[in-house]
Length: 122
Image (tube, rainbow, N blue to C red; front, top):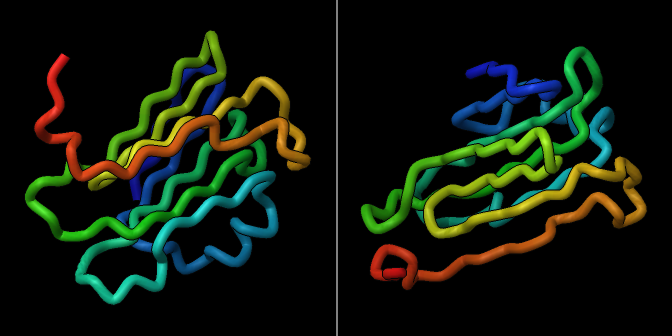
């Protein structure tokens, strides 16, 4: 597990679903998961983001295929805008943390799962 502080956020990253996943899920405001039951070989990186010293505001677990065309797990937090980007393999997720309610105001703003990413140019 890797633990990092960015601004007022605590970020934790595991290269698999953590043993205490059930507890994290109960405490998290928003839980998002992608392809956890995939039969394709791969890993399931898990990320939690929380206000420093608080319960997780976000828990994301996603299957990452062992595909040489995909990119490794990455997390970007922009504290001034409350934007969080989480990417792995060929999926990039964006979350808005301005309002903390589970009712949908804190949501996945954007999801992309394109196989064309490695060949995209500006």
